[in-house]
Image (cartoon, rainbow, N blue to C red):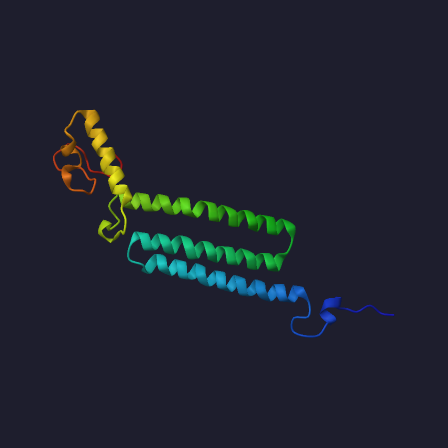
Length: 167
């Protein structure tokens, strides 16, 4: 009696005769879809007009695209060490992306790179105006002098402050 040269699942008939073949095909589909989403995220970073929409392009499709790529790679590799590593990569990506997007958005807002007229709600403007009012009271200035009354939270001309992003 001779042994077959191919594994038992290779001797089966049909295009997806064994679950590993189906997992390989599904893995390829997941990786292609994830790569397409990552590509679209990169194009969005270059083509979109303002900071909020670029932040959206940099976070949502990119995170979902990476997740799809990791799922596809997991379907291909199937080893516990590889799966654990990919799980950690995906977890760290999903935890750090919102924090990074928040910091970029906050920096853009404070440096004036965000068109405040295009915002639906601007909760930070009220908080910054209140903070400036309290700082003015601590310095002994009249509250109406703080902020220059321009509503943007920037320093008024001639009050001795630079008007930079961080005060």
